[in-house]
Image 1 (cartoon, rainbow, N blue to C red):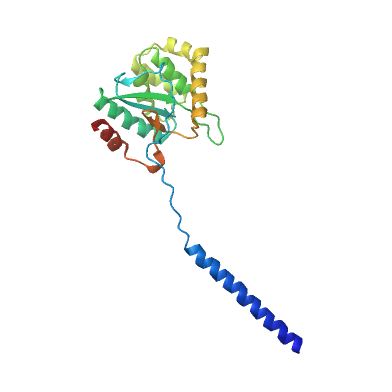
Image 2 (cartoon, rainbow, N blue to C red):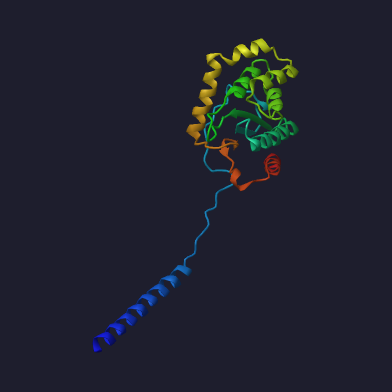
Length: 217
């Protein structure tokens, strides 16, 4: 009987000690202050992004340079494209826009670059921006038949355009932008750079207001 009583006393003491230790750790945990990590709206890092061979919308010597990596199949890309092009057209001397294609593969399909090859070939006929304006209104921009029907409205020489689609140089340009996207660490689109500094789109900024403020500085 004496041994049983001693056992229970030791058990109670062990529970009290364990409870006290837990209470102390809980108290210490409540004293910890976690500082949120603030990601700047525009990155501090400068990214080298070649644009020498890219078509320009706006003033080639403008102080504000906008570069967008896009995918025609991305709905948010279409919205951002409209905002950027409208802004540049409203401030043609203050801003310039470059558009780069970064086709994104889906879970079940590889990236389709047909629409992007089409843009490169439209540029050879000075219809790059008209072509892109058309594509953001197209439900299935990578459908070759639909796209060929739509480009007739742009007064493009269709035969020349089709020949360009399969030229090695066209494929090389697509491959070059894909490699550049990987170098920059781009894993999703849209991806926008302002004067070669990455814009943090995760903060869901009001893009029009932000650009207007940069122009009025």
